Image 1 (spheres, rainbow, N blue to C red):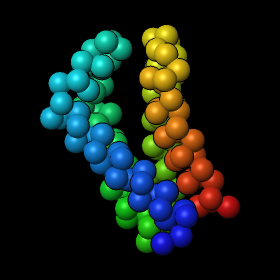
Image 2 (image 1 turned 90 degrees about the horizontal axis):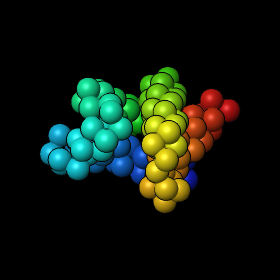
Image 3 (image 1 turned 120 degrees about the horizontal axis):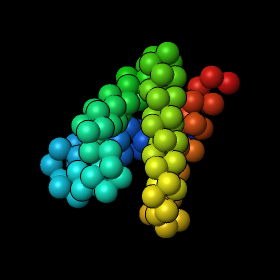
Length: 112
């Protein structure tokens, strides 16, 4: 497995876990309530799950990889923006920004 595929697998697994966690953990739902975005929680979780599945499929299909990594990068850029707007600490905001950078890198490497 090369480096890019390892990153894709890591990102896909992470988003699969985060997407499922929303539906089984009250903590995730409480975060969306705190943001004032509770009606977008289920949609966000479904987009994370779709993105994760797309990344896995994207290991064989570059078009799906481009859409999935781009979509997840956008989702995490918006998540970073929400964290900044809520004045969350740098430590709390870092994971969203990390996953934005990770998926932007996957997108860039796939397109290049």
